[in-house]
Image 1 (cartoon, rainbow, N blue to C red):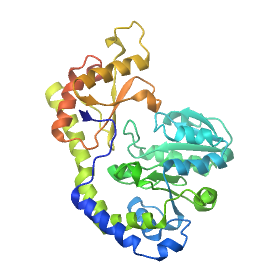
Image 2 (cartoon, rainbow, N blue to C red):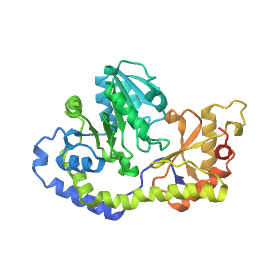
Image 3 (cartoon, helix red, strand yellow):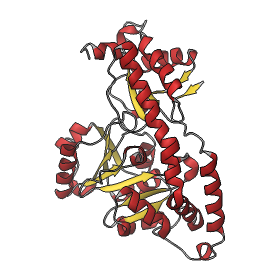
Image 4 (spheres, helix red, strand yellow):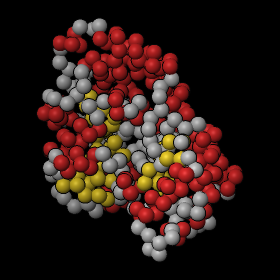
Length: 347
């Protein structure tokens, strides 16, 4: 089974050996066991600030993206959340008491989200949004800066900057993200950065962040060549697989698949391919998933990300070029996908 459902690939042996060595070094540093670091380990903060183009004094280490979301849900009554997006923050935001509404980027940027600026958070993901690989344009970034200047609290989830590079957080917006895409949920680390983030998050920081020893191990690993190993290996492999997928669709099937940033892409589905006269999004997606599964591929239904139209999300983690080519052939010949309709100018 070729897994395009989003499971991170294992690290190469060289990265694992470096990680184990840096864990040992961190564990032998006695002050890390006894001295609190409420804003986060200094080594890890410096590495992340340098890699993400963030002011180190404004960067705070959290346990995850969800942990950062807790702070915003506690402090603001309304969160206007992009759609489509990563679904994991929704129950956190709502469970912590915030009213969560969903809106497209166009709606958010036009101000069509309701709520008072002082009590509203606008939530975007860029670069390489999950599930569709979308990245804010220069014009959209400028509009976000305007919204922030008008008094709205804007949060940009930059988790996929590892795959896409970093153009810098839009002016006036907070940056949040996670290291989970570098290895999996076992990384158990994230960040939030912006003026006042540390003070605002202090109640959550009293009990949620990982040990300073764990944070230092990650900081040493990333600083001492670990991130370079991942960029040259796992992260580069994502680009190779994506390029192979798009190139195969174009050269063998005459389909120009839109470029996307990061590891995630949406494969649109054609409602006219269903046996049901008026199929639901769930019926379309489940039928397409079952057909791909029979051919040896595992993907994810786009409805889980609140996508507006039926689609499948494919994630090119741990997938080689040959596997990506096989996947391109499968989706191109499937009567359930809308790729040929899009190629021919239909929607």
